[in-house]
Structures are given as structure tokens and as C-alpha cells.
Image (cartoon, rainbow over all chains, first blue to last red):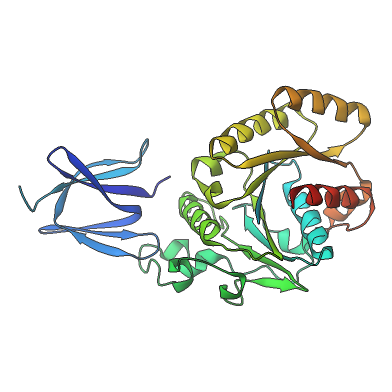
Length: 66
Length: 249
């Protein structure tokens, strides 16, 4: 499935923050995640990895505590 | 109850859906047919409707507009969806029989059908049917819908098996996937030309552990009606579909 699940990594800890992510917009200081049904959240994080083939995930690195 | 009708392409899923829907109507049930097939667009005719419903994809702005608007739909953001909640236009019907459609691939190079998979999964998960209501889902051909989790919100899976080795192989895969999701699975043999063929199909499916709840024999009147996009709600195939429905309910 092209739509992905987004996780935030804080050190070795992984936290799921959104399913069915349809759009990601990067801004200074973080990214906007928008799901298929229009829910929109801003995360103070940077994109680490995007897997579009196997697991369909977006890994974000928490910028808050780094 | 929500019944998903699955099987190999060409096994007769849509015809079986239309026969079951008409039989359910005769049992005084309100029937919602969910067209979850991204390709074929003639189901509304088989259900005796004049026009197809507007696809639910339009509720999220249409596939082409996903980038711009994404969803402002209150229907798909609500926790439960009942028949009465579906806006007119998105629901076509007659005499207690209704149809909704998830969406169709309309042009070449338009991209994948993943958004329709998400919409289908969420709609079916949230759909609530009353005691006197039944939803019959005309699923896309093959098994990809299991990978997408579309069947998560389904109560029962009915596999349509036509007389071919490939159809039986697809049935075995469906049985495995659906059982893995803790769904009740059964099969109906469709378009069978003779008792001898029925016997061979039954032997094969028995070995695969697939429970058969009915046999819909080949009916030339059904084939002729299909040529015109209609359903033939009489005769041996129709009566057999009624017995299948009784086993499902």
C-alpha cells in the first residue's frame, strides 16, 4: 500500500504517530503529516527513512530532544 | 451482517452478488451492495438501477484532487456509518436495495488504486448494519484486498469458484488469508455444467478444507441476461443463490 505509517524515533524508541499518511510537507523545524481523511499534524522531526516498497513507513527523527 | 464476495476474475462474483441481493430483498431485508471493484462499472445495471452512485472517492475530493484538498468529509471521519448517513447521490437504490461504489480507475497512467483500498477498508470497518439489513460486498478480483486489509471489517467471506484449476487455487489462497483474519469462510460453486464437474470441484475443495455451501448451476438465461448487463432473477441459478443466502444468514 502506497500510503504509509509514520513513526517518530527518539533514540531507540519508536512511536507510531499516523497511519495512512498521504502527504508530507517539510518546513524548517519539522514536517506536516496529512492522512488520507484530512487529519493534519505538525511534528518537530526530520525525515530519516522512507520505505515505499516493503513496509511502507516514514521514519522521523525527533528534533525536540536532540 | 457484512458478506464479502471474493474469487478469481471472471468467476461470476458480480452476478452472484446481484442474485444474492435480489434474494435478500425477497426476504424483506434492506440490502446495501458495496461495489469495491476498481474496474468493472456495470453492477448498477445488474441491480436494476438506472444510474451508478457517485463514487465515495469524490467525498475525499476525488483521487486527482487528493494532493490539494484531502478530506473534509464528515461521513468518513465519523466512528460509525449507517445506511441513513450516506448522502444521496452516493447512494443509489430502489425498494430497499441500495448501492455504493468506492471508486473506479478512469484513465491510463492515473496511478495506483491504493487510496481506494484505504477508503474501502475504512468504510467497511465503520459500516454498521441493522438486524434487518445486510451488506454484500462485490470485492475486486484476486487476493490483493487481503494484503490491503480491506476485509478487516467483514463478517463472512464467500468465495465464488468456477470450474477451473486457477479458480480453485485462488480459493485456497483466499481461505488461508481469510482464516488468518478469523473470518468465517465458505464457497459457492458457480457456472457448473454438470454433476460430474460438481463432484470434481467438491473433491478438490474438500482436500483444501474449503466448506461448500451451495452450487449455482450454469443457466443459459443468466448468461443471456449478462450479455445485456441485466440479472435474471428467476430459474435454477436464482433459486440456488437463495439457498446460499439462507446458509449465510
